[in-house]
Length: 126
Length: 218
Image 1 (spheres, rainbow over the protein chains, first blue to last red):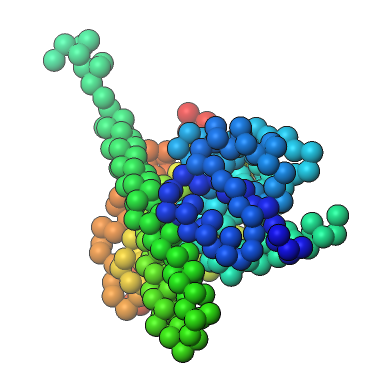
Image 2: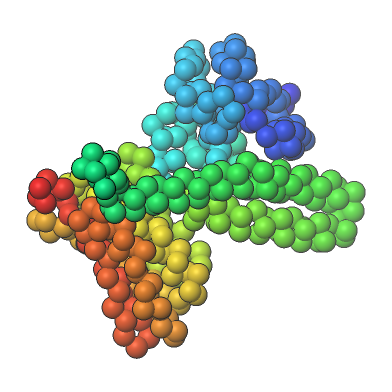
């Protein structure tokens, strides 16, 4: 991995979205781990030591909001929420849960790249 | 009819409320279904189109423009579907201020027609039921107005001692149907409020009034 690369953990239950998002991020040079349910994520995330958490909000066995609240990190990741619904209330809940940003699907890869660059700069600064 | 049976018959208001609850639940179900199926698939296609564009660019930049155009078509389709699901899904306060949620709706509407909201943004001291009902009525009104292809919208939220008042002014060359506000009025009446339509040449105004405190009516 280069210095610019990030360790990204994706939580997404839609198979194609997870597949292509993982592929896009890997082709951008990042290391990607993933989970498809809250349960899987809770089992894996605490020890994943990821730089960025990219989580869908509506998951089959819970919400991305519950996921973040259910985790404690020695080094909290740069958390980005994804949702198909972009209401103000959803963004407010994401912020309250600890997500730095709330992206509304369809995800704009350029916007995502911009947020990952912010995460990279923060990581470099610490 | 026996007294016992008469006392078990639902009131007209209860029937109306049950109908509105059923409509909202069905719209929520359809919105969720669209989100979980076509919307998710289009989202995935959007990302893969970008991967394809980057791959084509690396091999032969001259061949990239059609892929870029395809990416844009997919983006447009995904955005259109996302917009539809947002209008279908009954909006909720979710802990946010009414003014914030109305601003959110105004921005959503602005994707289709110029839409401005005037309100001071301060937290409104009113029963959450009235705020939530006003928000839902605003969502239904705005979507119905956009389907009428109005040319511009202005919203104004005010409150006095007794009422929350939302004015929605729509500029349109074509007059709205006389009964346009009736479904909105039916919802408002359940909380002791009203939604009335005034039509003038070139514009229409829907005025929704809901009591700030239901206790004031008891």
